[in-house]
Length: 203
Image 1 (cartoon, rainbow, N blue to C red):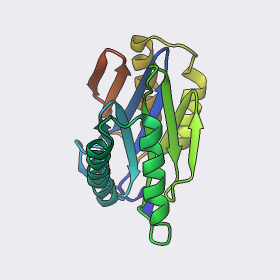
Image 2: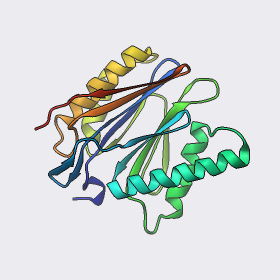
Image 3: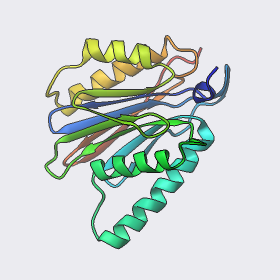
Image 4: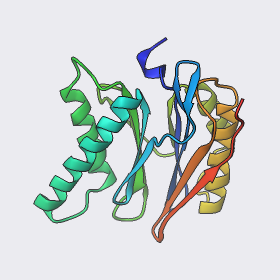
């Protein structure tokens, strides 16, 4: 088993019409043993959300490091960090440690200055991929890609985006023993953020 799969995770980010959504499961495991059902994997930095899938200790370390670097940026620049800048910062932080990497595969989702969706994903050494539709990370990536390709439509409204994200995530984690046990969905629009908790199978 890869060290990236040790704690289990499932994260999807998806774009809509002037909105973007990010969803994650809530399971913290130690291989096949479930330790907790309320582990946070998606974090908010201003108007940008970052999902961190991988080793739980590195998820928490990277969250603290990102918070610190973002506060430093805002003090120095006197403006908020855009999703693209945050994605580049995260990519650089990971690449700096490439010889002893953080075992995480992040997903970045947010709205840019023109309220257009921004999505990116990267591997554990920070090699980024930018997409217009959806990006996935975690132990259920095969399932999630299949569900997203089936359910995704262009220019979805926030309510439809929430429904699509929820269905894609729940159907995927039901077929992956390493993730699931509940989910959290965040929908980001120009008016604000809507966060909802989902119940999932617990077996």
